[in-house]
Image (tube, rainbow, N blue to C red; front, side, top):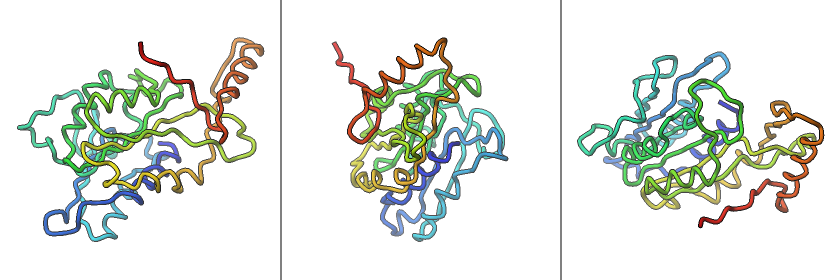
Length: 251
């Protein structure tokens, strides 16, 4: 999991308005889908990033890591394609759900998103990240999901959402980069009451981002093709230097 995704998780927890700390909401139920650490020597488990700020605020935390395959970081094996019904013990069970760098490996993302939505409490929060531009990896690898694509998945699941991308690179040498990762927070409830969205935009996640230069993993058949591609990209920057692709109007 990339450093900036972990920064995003920390920023979400810093701006998250946990349920009222009373007799009813003293426990925060957390689920992470796609929790298996493929290489535990280089990957950092996000559990502590989630649990520590909640525990410091006086909450008890129940954290369950789910993944299709057993392995490090997995408490329970689970297939996101398994349909969640109202009689399922996972229905409406979670205050917080994390699904990070996982949806590119899900064969039916619409079904998976609908199931995640059913697992949220009415004021629950879903935290997502998915690579938009990244090399084919960890088969099966089905998708590269754009901000519009993630928005369609969340809208179809009837979730209110806020969607963003990796911010512009800060290092002077990283003059351009393709947006690597799309991130989102979503809820069936009033999202603005559950998380400080404006604060999230001004968070450490944005301030410390150094970029993931993509030139090292992109390959062109000719120098002319490379020149054309980066010229086109630079022509679609906004005033902040961020890449804003033209919106395609639906017919």
